[in-house]
Length: 262
Image (cartoon, rainbow, N blue to C red; front, side, top):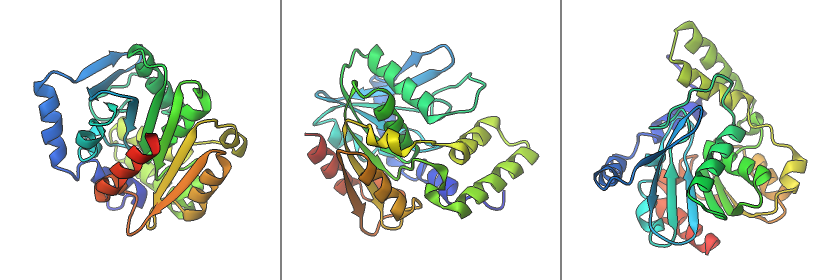
């Protein structure tokens, strides 16, 4: 394709922008810490680091847990970090035939938490991972302690009408060129979802920290809306930051995660 939507291109670039991630994953593989949770329609790849209160790390669209290569070593000194590849992404598989959804992703997080016998968890979700975190907060409030999102949106137009139209054109072109169905489904997900209502946000009981960059693809009023409607939410806008806060501002992000979850 000659042109990708800005949002999809940013996420694809950030999913492979950090060579250090391969070093982290290589260490895990050597220690045989990487495992799969086998579900009826997917195999979910995950890795566990450290001890303490459970903290799930959820990456963005088209990426993998390698996006958190800078965060995992430090966070694992304070928490039990569970990094997972979302279904149909990274090393996780997907055999489902229905459209991908953030609710389904949240169901996978719950399934892994149950498998690991974790009664209460924290979540940090970046981009699509943030959307999943919000869906988890809505559906599984009794299991969630606190959550943090970076660059999340609660409906597609949170990125602006132009970006949504760009993604629609990209999908049409991908279909015409017989691009892999997995890639088409992942992009279609951002066109169709999320569909989170104001009332659902208002009913969230967990404490939340809503983060975005001052140059994020998520519109500032949209980030403010999320923080305003969730009763126990705080908001922080990172200076000189794009959508890629875990890559660009890892040190500041680590400090904020530790401070908020402690």
